[in-house]
Length: 454
Length: 133
Image 1 (cartoon, rainbow over the protein chains, first blue to last red):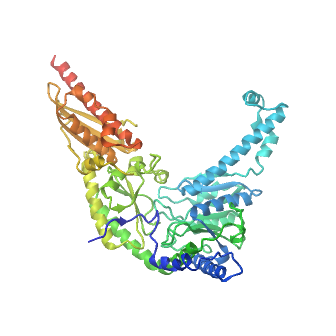
Image 2: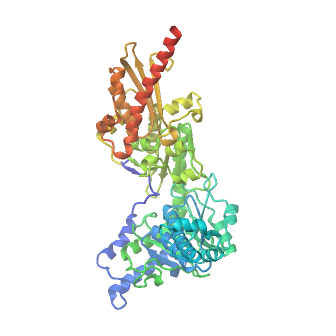
Image 3: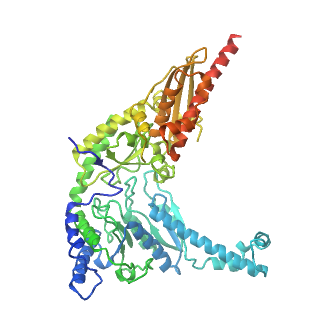
């Protein structure tokens, strides 16, 4: 008998591998030293442990240990990469290209930089308006003066507007229906002001793997830095910063069976990539990220990286076999199912599938002993269906009917068999009470009905 | 999100799921909501000549709260007159099921479904009477 509840949400987080916990324990007990304490044995032990972990993390992604900056996690790494590059290279340009399907840590960072730029431009505009009008601009006379003076086409203002603002301009590229970026569209979006391309390795919802090596080669040839959010999938698909010409990469420990609260930013040394820090202080991590190192978590992260590297080929094959069993089990038993995103270019442990006419949240309620995620609006605070699925052009109803399965190192074949049976049963039950399924079966085109949106 | 016990109970044992013959002159059908919003409710009422609701059936595409709201109103309207059923409000449904604020729209949909089904029945009857006279 299979043990409940079953965890199939390994894109959200992964369980801590017991071998990782074992490695960490001494650093939560007797070896508590500060890695920055240079003159006693407690500090030396901590420093040695951090160095080893740095080596382990670097090796997983084909980097050198001096290129690893430890952070609190991938959200911080994403922030540091983008804000750090924009600030450091501000005299070179301020244009970023990213994808609509990126993680919020990328999208919201970009949006903040756009706001910073807009606020600076608004400020400059008022300054120039005052000059042109020869009087102070107040809230009362502002609109009247703006009507009189066309600041937008004023040459001086336009020159000012091209100066560094501290913010950025951002292009959010659409993806193709399979979830991958088009290299032609990426190349076409580049301008002389483009300093950074930020494209993820694998998507956290649909598991689609981007053509990272091709993107890296394109960016290198155009002299544009390439940041890759490599949070998902590096323990099941090979990721190599040299082969893929990645300049900056965000990685996270708790997505590969390590502890939470620790991650890293890879920063390339040759050719050298520079970033301005976003956290100032004691100058840790070669000045790029101040703050006392979280030694026990770093040790765990290092062990997790080493296990991931050693077990990747086996793990990848095992996950693929289980995922295919899950996929075939569901699609053979049920009609009207749709796999969201490319099946070919996908993480082996991911299945994002829509069961047409069975709503995602109610399906999750029906399989409450199985932890999964849904793209249904009802599972989010915003009541908007998944922006990733929408960016693929997935119909809204199908976005509401999507379930994300994330298989992992500890998923068993018995669990997959159990989940297939349970999901098939519950989808049938929901469809039996779905007016849409009944109508679809009768051959009624649901698009032809005038629905009352609410 | 945590569901109330009543929502879970209705979700696990929905009452009166099914389909009535929509061509039956005594059956009113209300179809409300939209697939794009993630909720569609279909409520069917079989109404006698003297205006008594003899039977009710529903089918719902939507979250657990939407299913529970429609299941609950099928229980409530059975045996009521059309006029009594028209007074059932979304607030009654939301209160009975302890719906959180983000799920209030499910109860609104249930109220709308009752009204739409009754309106459909009245339209049918008016058309029939016009034909007869």
